Length: 224
Image: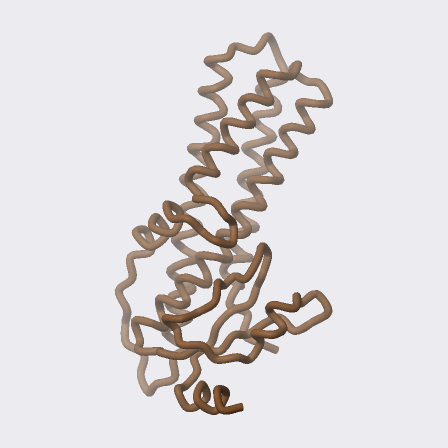
């Protein structure tokens, strides 16, 4: 069984999703009375998304720090040196950049989801079934985005840990079961230069990861 590099990600997700669920439940309660005031509703939704974002980003930073340190420990060498790693700047860079797997910029998509929820609230009557469905849908789609990015950050922080510790080649490790897609199955076990990697994750909800490898392994593989 391969190393569970996503253990910190999974723990963070539990805490994130619990807090998000509470926020949406509170919002649902607030929307259950009186007539909608457009400005107040916008401010309420914006404030909720701001609180959630601050909480989510803190968790991302914790995940990045843990993934980086796990990568340092995984590098084969006699002694592990203490590594300085600015997880805040690292996460901010990822969230502001375009990601080919998600096909969006995280910060822009987060704002878009917030605005779409506000628009759906204004367009429906308070307390009815449609509004409850809209709130659930908004929670689900945001959770999906958060889930993907906690994995993205785990993998990127791991790669950064390898790079900073002299790893030049890495082996692709897939979850080898009946759910493994053809792309990941083909890459499983293959060694790549760390600066010439295929996109990883390879697709939404991909949980492949990388482990240190050697140039000798890479060269033998190329011969074969």
